[in-house]
Image (cartoon, rainbow, N blue to C red):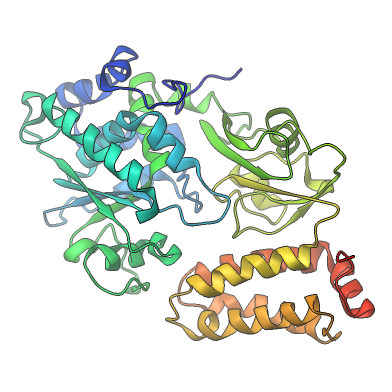
Length: 423
């Protein structure tokens, strides 16, 4: 068993209490930081740890914090993001339910590093039970002197409120998230060359980090960057990762493992392999916005760089497993239907392109496909790089994987004039 960072305080069927968290070293990092460290030192430690954002993009966390200029105006904001609307991704909800004070301490430390005075916990509305849990534990943290004015008798003051999102996938995009909090339609709104760390909520510097990313902060500051790096299975990796496994496996669930654990090991050892009588066909390795991977990639290390080398992405680490009897045209059609529905409709490639691709795939699935649909779909996948934000590029990744690795299955639909998996 590997050392746990995020699930170290896991209790069967319930969240860890404040007392249990503190008994295992909780809030020690905050106390030491407020006594002994300058804000810039916190950022340096996190940078040295090699922590990359766990929300999907994999951007260096310390570098994001440093992007808040020293001369930037106040107030400054920290927004922990638990929107988590992508199919197959459920790690943040489990993490919040497992150890809420790990997240709360991480938010406070992030705020100290960037000199923020307010945090807004952004969470999807269907996670109402989790939102109530966080609100209750925030109150306990205030009572214990970890939030509010002059935290732990220091000159640092900071507090957190909970914001229930509008409940759309696009709200997870950073600029759309800011639009949503400030009461505007949640479509991406970008200023060329200007990032949220310079001009975010209400025009002020804003740091947005995924909940899993924030959960790593206190352990890093308590045990050191070398310790965190040493947890990885890959030479260039750092820390552990929450891998979610769903689909046609014996033990679907969320497993904290060293980052870089091979895909095969996650599925076969921790997910207990395929359901009886079924054979592995493909998986989405990092959530619904990643491309299908066939069997020959099962030994890839689940870390950012190894996934990039094979032309894929780690994404959120949400592994969705498909068996030989599953129609991948139908599966792709289902995923694309989700993205068509969730598009904000702001730009032409996304608004017009995704429904058009959905229509082509629907015709193929219905036995009405034509040979010319295949190059047309390939061209549409490439054209999505012209979309306003990364939503469309992620949405077409399953289509790209389908055409790259399972084109024969698509052609079989066309040649047989029907779905060969429907008996």
